[in-house]
Image (tube, rainbow, N blue to C red; front, side, top):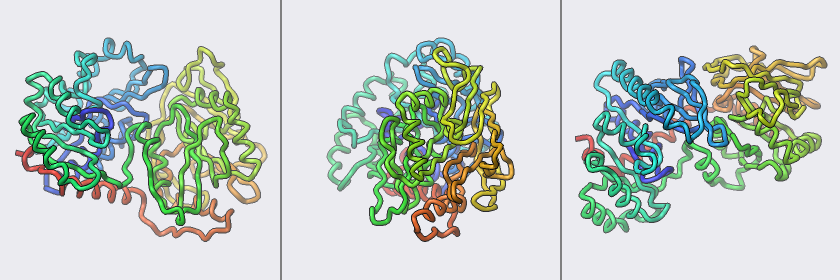
Length: 495
């Protein structure tokens, strides 16, 4: 089990790397995180929701991601409220204040059920468990569902990860260990110092001090990994800095920074393009003159839409379009672009201060009605725009959207018209959207879309014969695994 001295210490990255390293060693690693809080979700093969980070860890283990690897997913809705996902299915919503009182017992049972499922489906495997936040949040310990309670449940060998870049690494480690109960501290078998910049040998005396003071071996000092890696939450997302050569950048894409952004891994494939620069724009800021504006998915579509209007950003978007701009929405972002959204069950908004029907941005002629049943499924469809090509991804939404176009302005994005629509002006993309999360992972389709933007600027088209983004993720996993393998004394803990 990998626990951290704080949120963002690097638990997810270390777990991912360990899964790949163990796989290389001929073992059968299986990732597990009892409870995760994130709006960046993946849909497994059976149509269940799980955290995207555990899906990445499954790919690192070279196994199919399933919801039992992340039995509890909390999806923040704002106002200290989260949707609760148990083994892939939504079971309700709850405030943070009430969660530990009302959902602890059922949550622990779901975690045990998931562990039993993994145990029954795998033979001679090694569970690689990720903790959450800090394991010594003293005000929450009595209702802990995801750290030392799980460690004790399965008698896990625990690794404590500390982020030296944050500063105070010695206090992080000593403070965490001192707050653990004696039976919990015994489970800590090793310490990792993460994100060290510069000459690692300069920390030799620090390593020696930690080992002498705590009696626990420092398994390794891990250098800062520059490889772009899927982020777990929005804090990491907005803090992530991708350094590119300015001379290579030819296309700029603005991303609308909405409050309840979800499934932000949809944007990673665009970030991986050397010639593309992503720029975050908050409602109220000037869009400027990017080659495209993307409105990403939202956990609270109507609330985010109303915030856009409140800030007058709807007028900014229309002004941008009138000047020749191009807008593309993904899932909730596409729903916002339509004429009307209806949410009588309060699934995508808090309707106490809103009407059940609200006007969209009035950019593409579609209407969305939010239903009680969530659409959760992996998809493989044939895209018909920009050209006929097979693409895959997944759907994760409450809304059902229908085409209101009577003038022939909309073009179906795929043979299945429910996947999305495109609106052209003078032969160029003006607006459009899709329900298909992961659409940009399809590298040929992504490049076809980018080439439509490049065409408007008189730029040469990008090559289409490139590997899908899954190969890029594989490379990123191998890069961090190589780093971990080089700097980690793994045999100590595998004993």
